[in-house]
Length: 444
Image (cartoon, rainbow, N blue to C red; front, side, top):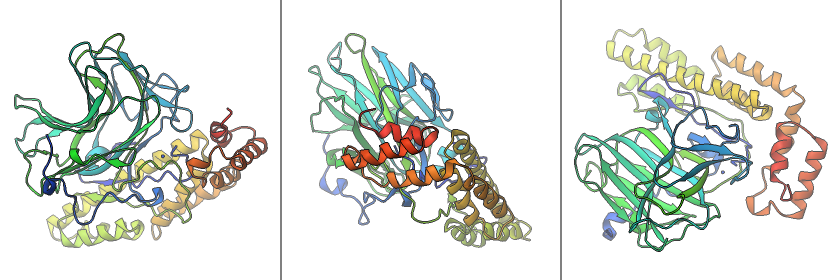
C-alpha cells in the first residue's frame, strides 16, 4: 500500500473486487461486548480495507514492497491458503521472522480495526528446549495511553508447554522498565499443518480486545475496560507499526518452528474467513478522515465525501481553503491533502493491477473512482482509463472469471465447478485469469 502524506489522512476503501481473496480470567462484566456488537461479519464488498496481502503479486524469495523484513522470511509458491503464494517464516531456534508494516497509511487506520490471517505450522512442531516458549505472531508498536511510554501490544501470541500443546495470548510489553502484563486462553490447542484462521479486534475508544480462532471467539481472552480506562488493556490510539510473522523468545528444540501465513487483512468491519467476492454494483471509493475535522464547515463536507461525493466535496473544500477564518482554512487544506494522498494511493493500485494483467479489476477501480469524482475534472480521466481497459482482449476474460468467483469455497471441488474451470482455461489458455483459474483446479 502506498504511503499517505499527512497525519490527518484518508483511509482507502480498498475493495478486492472479483479477486480470489484469495479471503488470568476476566469477570463477565469486563468481557461483555458493546450493545452494538462489531463482530457481525459483513460481505467483502461492504468492508473498508486498510490492508490486504495475499502475496500473489510477489516473486518467490521476496517480500511485498509495502513491508520490511526481520529475520529469514520470503514468499513461496509451493504452499498457499488461496492462489499459489504464501509467506514462509523459515526455521530458527528463536528470534523474529516477520514482515513489518508502517507509515502514514497505518496511522490513518486509527485505534480501531479488525485483523485476520491464516497460518499453518510444519509438523511435528518443535518442543521447547526448556520449560516453555512464548511466541508472538502479530505485534503492534506504539505509545501507551496510560504511561505515555513506548511499548508493544502483542495482538496474537501463543504459550507452548513442554508437551507441545499451547494456549493463545494477549500480551503488553513496555520497553522502558515497566512490567509486562497479559492474558492467556484456558483452551488447550495443538499446532496444525492445516490452515488456521485467526482474527483479532482492538478499539482504543472502548479499550476493547477480542480474539477468534476458526470463527469461534475465545471469550476468556476478551477485554472490555471502557472509555479512558487504560489499565489492563492499554490499546493505543494509533500504532506506529504492525508486524506479522513468528517470534519466539525462548529456544525451541532442533531447528525450530517453520510456519506460513497468508491472506492478511486489516479492515474496519469484520470479514471473517471470506475468500471470494463478487461486485454487483459500481464501486464508490471514498476516503475516511481519521481523525475527523473539528471545524463544523469542514466536517460537514468530509461526511459527504465519505459517502462517495468526492468530486463535489473537493470543490467545496477548495472554496473553504480561502475562507477568512484561519482555522477553517487550515482544516480544509488538511482535508484536501488527505484526499490527494488517498487518490495517489488508489492510482498506484490501479497501475499495479494493470501491470499485473488484472485488466478487469483495474477497469472496475477506474470506474469506481470516476463515479466518486463526479463533478470534478478527474472523473473524465478515470472514465477514459476504464474505457481503454474495457477494449483490452483480457477484459472479457476477467469479466467471465467473475462468475467463477461467485462460487463459495466449499464448492471448489464440485465436479460442475471443475468443469467450468476447465472450460475457462481452454477458452483463455494464457494470461492473468488463466493463472487464477488454473490455481483453483483441484488436480493442478
